[in-house]
Length: 181
Image 1: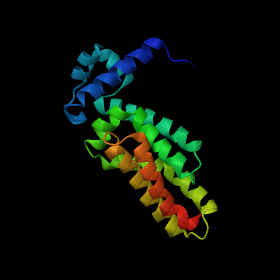
Image 2: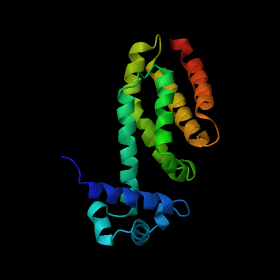
Image 3: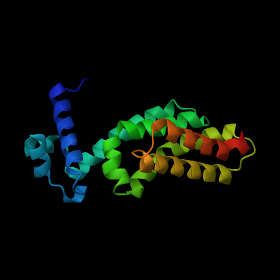
């Protein structure tokens, strides 16, 4: 069923308002009243969609994670170019959220949630495709590459050009995986 355009507009206004307020405050310090004033939406309307500001942020993140998961499902987990592109594109499409929540506040749990989404499909694929790799080695390789990839992109997204960053990341990932290919 298609969502009413007014609902989409209201949710987008609330999301933009929260992200704008996150530039100067943490989500713990932002009130529903502030979000509503910024979005020009009543509190009653806010509560039709979200429980509180944390729920709104969670829904913003969930939308981003769902898009990322869809991208992972069409990505070949052994193709380091596709993996790097997929992570970079996720950060690029959600740049404001990453600047405000992931990079600035260094919320490790949120970053780990991103990495965990890729864990099972990647591990299962790597076990089948990588030669002579033990279960422990595949777990360590995944942890090393996934944490490095997500944290590098999130940390340096604003300081390096896409082509330069992806070139460096791809080279490092190829070197890590080369012994198993």
